[in-house]
Length: 147
Ligand code: CA2
Figure 1 (cartoon, rainbow, N blue to C red):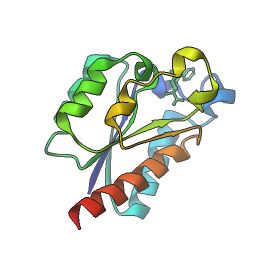
Figure 2: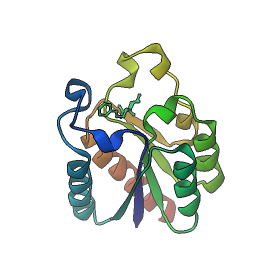
Figure 3: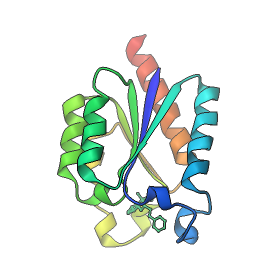
């Protein structure tokens, strides 16, 4: 089972500032953590991070036919991007939306998620553990689909 973890703009800056909101773990640590959790779940994990909307759309399109599930934290594009929503709908690969912070308790502009409509679940406010939970959700969803 192949899972692709996609992270949007500024996630590569984790652990540098706003530690009170996003925690002190770095992006490198996040990758290491996800690799370890993926191994425990016996799933193959790969990663993509970009600060560019089109590059994120390209990565989603490239997943078509190759990847079984997508974990996506579109970061700020969550709240603006119809293009990412459309890409997820186009490929129809099961996807879980993850946010490190609890967006529901933050600014009004973070209350809207365009991508949510194309995701089987949204996990927010669980820190980087949310990525593990998303992989678990996808594994169960995909396994059920196959069985
Ligand atoms: O909580 C999340 O995971 C977010 O997707 C993170 C985004 C934010 O725009 C979303 O509303 C919620 C921000 C990504 C990281 O931004 C940083 C800002 C300062 C220092 C380090 C990272």
